[in-house]
Image (tube, rainbow over all chains, first blue to last red; front, side, top):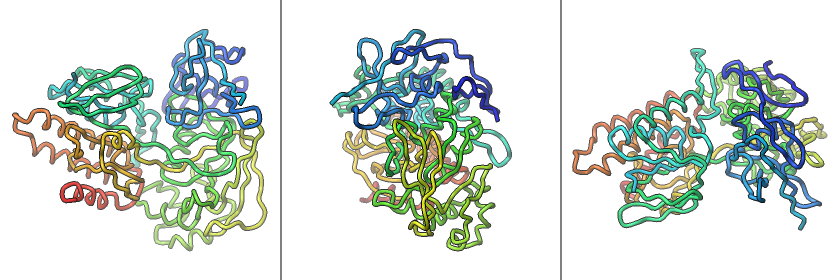
Length: 107
Length: 395
């Protein structure tokens, strides 16, 4: 098929009906790790494209959480960006140099 | 002060915006997503004549048409409250407060989830999330996955994921429990799928003609599934739990009888993503906030606000259109949007002879769209809708 495996990434580069997408040309920082992203990505899609499914930790004993609905309904994908602002990763577009971190709940 | 504020920039909201604004109505459209188009974004299917219907392109055309009539868009804005004012409605969002004479709620639908252990693990996403991820974000949800839940949306999005190059190991039923109820019973699902007219014709052809009784079809359904587009559909297997330490690693699968009761021992299937397909429900919270009465109708996929065939509500200046009135295809939502847009024009311009004939013609267009829609979500939609309209008039 048209899915091109690229260093463990899950980007759908080409599509038989929808065509090709632009190359990943920008970077965001997620918990200190540099993540390649495409212009137009959301935080959620950029992380998922890099096979990062864990977005936040509910508490040290319990499960982590990632995207669930991907359209803003469920609020499961929330992350922190600059100045500790909490946003829904699925509704927030990335920009080059964006700083994103997991919300870690300790209690 | 706007003449019309529309909440929801999906197929219905966009059509309503075009219908109203081209007759001089000053229209403002709000959506929470960063792109207009709603559920058109990501829709992709092949018509029986082989032609591809691309929701992204349809959305772009509608947006351009609306913009040509000076419709203003406010994206990335979440509506948090509504209030009735002396001469219309006040809409509170996280990006500002807006006043309008007429308000159209075109909020669409939300997904129902499926209850099973492990369903909050990262890697478990809704089937709609997978659609947006693949076709809009252009990312696969993982390397190898499954879908739980068999319904019209499952079949459409399974095909879309496959076109993205996704690796789907199979489609399974949910486990039997007090929440999943009939959604976990093979016989019930077979009856539903075979009762849905022209839905997924290739699936019906493979399972047998519609002249085969569903009970027979499910009794003799092969344990190892039947393939549609190369994806095995396990109508006699349920996923009993999703397993993983920090994210999805595998699912536990159980062979079941036609009522959904376990037969034999479970097996384990390694996967890194799971899509839950529990169907859709109308997204009605804002209508409730506005004071609309609500009716529960199975054929409309849940509770819907009371409304007329012209998309009016009992609240002055408040209109509805699209999936908030019952889950149906985008084609129907678009046709409803035109009706709502015209009804709003007639409401705002009472001194001009309300164009009743045009409104009636547009209402006929809704029925036509319903007949032509490739995906029928439930049987008896037409009849049940007329009971809603009757209750609006006489109830």
